[in-house]
Image 1 (tube, rainbow, N blue to C red):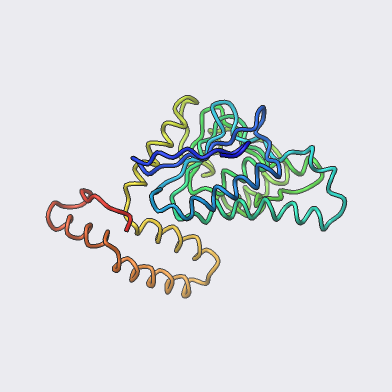
Image 2 (tube, rainbow, N blue to C red):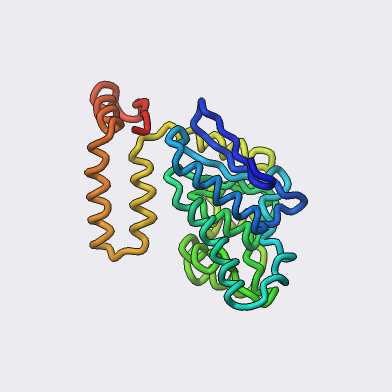
Length: 261
């Protein structure tokens, strides 16, 4: 349990919630970043967890980095170090073996939007607002906003959002593929939990699928295909492959009870 980031675990369902709690705006400070990094490290080793939800509470997800910490950055080297601490925490989250979902209520701006983009999926409340407004401060996104956004929605739209610093409402976010679904605000987190519970029931191969897709993005197609073939082979060394195939033969598709082993 940290001062600003808490971990709630439901052992029965295999779902964990990373709860951001730094009122009033959940500004992402260096301490919050360190706590997030620590929790991601803890989850990476927890084989009892199959899915993770990131939630900032019912009013706000995270309104960005803590701008009050910026004046302390005296030179380029310190600014780069600051940025890399943010990057490392979000990479730790992004690289979790579990399926991850951000449940976004209210603002997800700057570092908050970057935090949401580091998860596999984003569910938005109907009043959620996304954006990368750093250009309005004379800087640029320092935690992946120039890179993840274009990978999610395409380079042209990502350029427009980053160049302008404008805000994107939930409806537009759904249209451009930044979020997977939009719900009434009160339903956003419960819907994310329900989806997470379904993913947590999935087989070990879900983790292989996630890793192959993420790693394959940076590879030429021929190399990525080889990566997929290796992971396909790995699945044949799992208990879940035996369970899934036998269940299909006995009962048809979609009825297996997996162990994530």
